[in-house]
Image 1 (cartoon, helix red, strand yellow):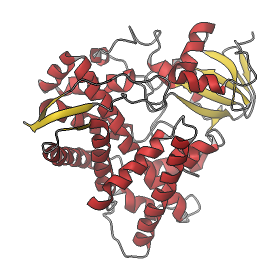
Image 2: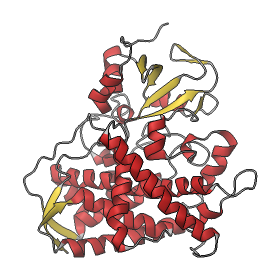
Image 3: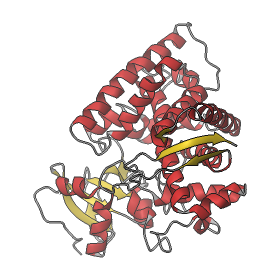
Image 4: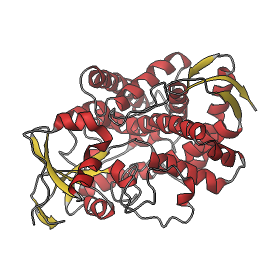
Length: 414
């Protein structure tokens, strides 16, 4: 049985013009969780839904090497990072990241997060009005560097935050946004290379349980220290995703504003509700649109013969809004997670599959814990006003963010 096929010599412009809805729109139109199209000059198979995600994360069927476009590696991921690896080398590198996610280190991360929010709110009380998004990114940058053991001087906070933000913002971008992300990555890699080199030559001695120490002294499967450049890429793969949490924080603030009953429930101090709220923010709002992999060896699934080397895109946003998986998926309702039977493949805001050996994001626990502390702080530890502004967010721009960046004013600490 032939799968649906989108007509056109190349549909890349349609992807750019429809953004997060490109794959979901076609899944609905074709009444199919699999279809074929042409993007970036090549045949691409798009899939979505829980069964599709399970297939996508089968490492016998798919590989990550060669899946990410060069422009993505040059701006967001970096070259030779863990996201581009497979098999034993990937598992070995993945364990480097997982070793940082101990209960003790996550508790320390929560303490650092609470401390940095207190510092931020104290400074915000001196401001009449400001963009929460950019300020939240700065808070996240301070949290990331302190937790990772990376020195960050007050004088360089704005530059480092701006660079991480530009890398993140380069996803789905062409023209100036892409080149800004590339320039920011090059500058950040030079900065981190210098710091790791200082650790290796004895000028700097970070605590042994930090990411800086781990990346500086990690050895590959052959027993060799990571190349200095690769070590820098991987340390940035700790720092950049934490800065990216600033978008989730902004969307969380938007949720509290648009659905005030959720803020009231957060203020009641129920830890279970806080967790459900965080998960619903991650499910409901647009963050990652899709993920890519290449077929490792020929196989059949969904009525289609997947040929070796074919690029396949998994619909992340659409799976998190799939009506077959979520009741009223376009309604913001944290309580949906109250009796949620967790699957490795139905809720995939940061990827699916297994944490330890698969390609699911090692930092997902970090994201959830930082969001819980941050959004509870916004709800319970400070008062602020939300002036009239344009709070709409685009489903075309990737990554998305409220147009006004969520302006707040008259901040006071409770």
